Length: 122
Image 1 (spheres, rainbow, N blue to C red):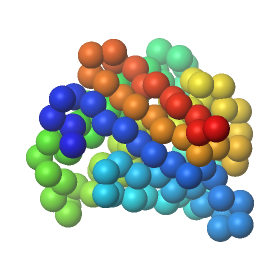
Image 2: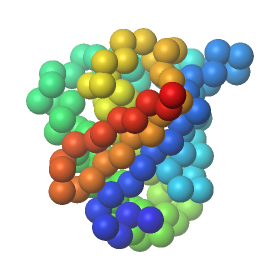
Image 3: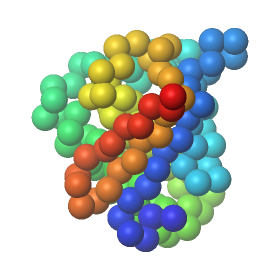
Image 4: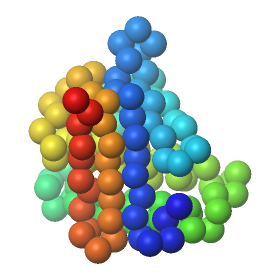
């Protein structure tokens, strides 16, 4: 999945009816409820651009390492946390100002570009 130093996170977007944001990397699906989403978004907002870039890169590199190892069950929570960091910081950089307005999208991270790319579904 990440043997080339890249991964893609896919989300159907924030779902107000369930008050959740789901995202997936491969077959691993994670959900954040409103409280977790608000807390994570606030934490991301408090970071400087340099801090956000460093945190996102560290999380992405750790996630690639976990994916290459095959994600044993003990590492699932770490993988979800790393994916959430990369996902939310990428969307903030893309200009999303409110986590409840996250649209259906894909966030692609590549080791060689050192930055996530966001594609919003049309």
